[in-house]
Amino acid sequence: MKKWQCSVCGYIHEGPEPPENCPVCGADKSKFVELLEDAPAVPSEAAPKKWQCSVCGYIHEGPEPPENCPVCGADKRKFVELVEEAPAPDLRDDQPAAAQAGRDASSQGLYDRVTDLMVKNHAHPISVHIPNGLLPVSIGFVLLAAFFTWPTLGQAAFYNLAVVAVAMPLVIFTGYLHWQKRLGGNLTKIIIYKMISAGIVTVTCTIAVVWALIEPDIISGQGGVSVAFILLCLIMLAAAAIAGYFGGKLVFNK
Image (cartoon, rainbow, N blue to C red):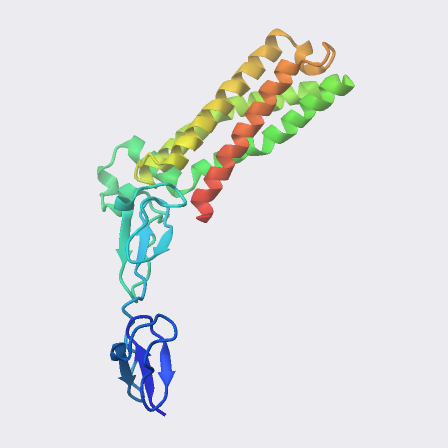
């Protein structure tokens, strides 16, 4: 039995003659070519091209790259076509961008060498786990202390928030390095959202710590429930969650 392949969509028909029209894409019989035995299938004209976002590594299939990356928001100019049969380049390689560019490490200054090592060894995801881990617990302690007059938990909440406030400059700095050296400094929507969220966490956490230093009863629960302080803490927690959400989109491409 002869085999015929539609050169438009790749559909394969078996029979003495090709069909009058392709049942898949509707192309007429002139678009069919006979497949000889042991011969490779004819490449389809409609086979989608593959494009990779050079910012986050997302891969898009289609005749053209998307106007904007659905993961990180980079525009179509940041996409590169992936050649068929060639493995997709790891545009988010563990090596910093400086190393990818082939710079001699010995010629780098101390700052560049240290920051390249920080990016290579994932200093940002490591440091960001400090506020991500402590903030939910801290806010939980604040709520328990406020509503049940539990000074011990209020004191624990204060120390946790103080650690978060101290850690946030490191989180922001390592995030900046990751953005510059790993993501090429592209100011996409996701990066903007992460920057704004990190700024809100830093400001609200600093305000909460200073407020608690000035008025210790505000966090111990002995001064009654402060709606304003609790609202400040909830804004802080929401901003951290938003930053984590968009960070996840960059990491997991979803």
